[in-house]
Image 1 (spheres, helix red, strand yellow):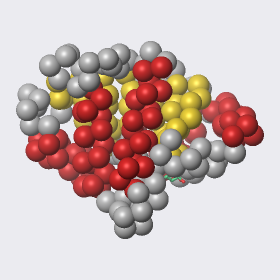
Image 2 (cartoon, protein in one colour):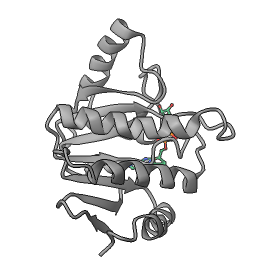
Image 3 (spheres, helix red, strand yellow):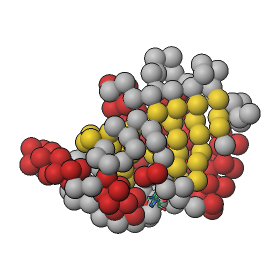
Length: 187
Ligand code: AR6
């Protein structure tokens, strides 16, 4: 599904493996220790190669890691991209411990990093919805609203944002949610 904004920017919902899709920047769903893990993080390190972890070791050495709601940048190794933005989503407890603001902050931080680096196309996984337990519907609302607000803005150089959903169930949920919340832009 494509959502076209009046300024020519595009939000796309895609099913698939984020490591296989060519973009300028791929967002990873990382942990605050930046030590790798399962899920999309594991897939990104496997496909990108060990250079990514070597770069993260340096970042960790300097800063101790990455706080929840933020992101750090590395090169993308063998991935079909220039950069990986390692975003740290919140671990979901009950939604009353700042999780919505932290999840929105992840998306915003990655979009800011994209603007700073002249990134035109960027792909996001559904951050926090796997091991971190964020309810899919609430995560979809936040992801779609945050990305749409950015793309609709006047100053953005990012021209295409892909939300890459790993399975058909997630894809349908995001599609339904987009049809409701972004209905004025849907083709
Ligand atoms: N492409 C796209 N989406 C994927 C892929 C893939 N290759 N693999 C999984 N997903 P998760 P989190 C989906 O658990 O919840 C790691 O151990 C998956 O179906 O990867 O933010 C980190 O190191 C789900 O919808 O990330 C952290 O410790 C979504 O990606 C922790 O997990 C996110 O699931 C982060 O947990």
